[in-house]
Length: 166
Figure 1 (spheres, rainbow, N blue to C red):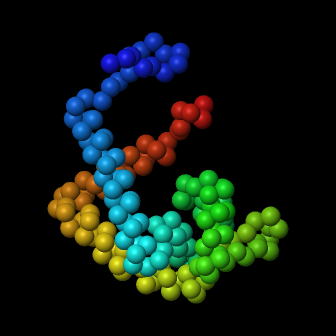
Figure 2 (cartoon, rainbow, N blue to C red):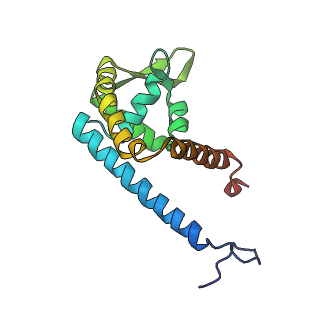
């Protein structure tokens, strides 16, 4: 195996051991397959993409069903261009609308429409049933707790400083 090190670094890389590599590869496969399956099932059952669903969920989390565009992009961890293009497609379908912000001429809000509200209300029960069937029905209560703990620890690590930003 070649020694791959960070430029300017003379230390050996910390390769994954067999157990870590097995866990990592299983996680990647699970994430890819689960995301694809959830997306296919959601599209077939509701005519919403997983991205549409994510946007609508974030809009329904607040009273008034509205968020600033950049705030929504941050929450979804999407690039500004992806957010703009996706919101334009959703607006054409009548799921969301753009409202100018009276206090800030440059800013705008994305607002869920009655059609978007109806779409998420129709999709949510089936989507939750799919999540339950594919994930939670396969786990014990202890495994669900462990999944939450592991996910929260990794998210805390991701929320920390990014070494690429230095």
